[in-house]
Image 1 (tube, helix red, strand yellow):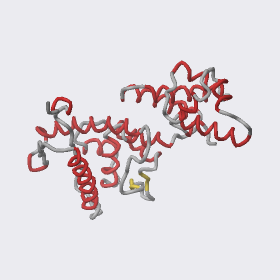
Image 2: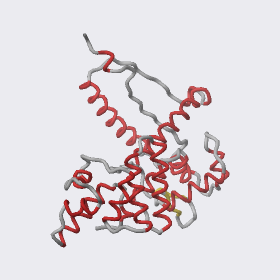
Image 3: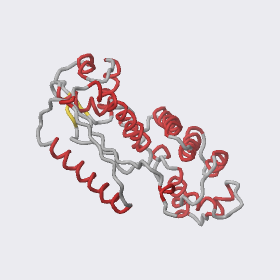
Length: 277
């Protein structure tokens, strides 16, 4: 079983803890649950399976039943809080506390770099821009960004990108991408940061309507009446379209500008209000 700081799901940690104990002894869910102060013999089993939730108040009891102390107990309780929070803003606060605990104990959370990458629009922009401006200093890179950004913010982003192995410096001290693309992957926490970035990019798109010359940007849209089946087909078509766009963009090694493509497809009505009577 890996170190607790390698987890972001408390449910998975409970499941792995039980499986490890079970493999070494006659450990049962009833024994585990009783030690945590629950009356139902299968309460924690159902929690691990996602059928029940663990309350913030009960998280410390469960952590103690697993012999967690100090920062490990704190980290487990934060995982429970992360799962229980409802808004992206709350989840961001809790996950940053999880990252702080991991950082303080020199442990890297796998999802941490991905979360931080998608937390700010500056990271993907500078990941594209820095390699295209060999030898450029942070001030020059800052001036090249259309949304206003400081040299200090550029330096902070570049340091993170190198640390996360999303950029590296070659023998001449120029930035080089380690991979051509970055994807979110099957992570539980990353979508929170991605949604935040989508909001940022949406706001930047609004600014571009007035701030960018019409011959340098393209905005268009459709309003459609569709069925649920058509929705699934359109979403698949968008996925294929994105792949084709990526293929076109990566055909050439050079770069003139960094562009952002927002693909938005969302309902403008409530189904419940449109049912025929």
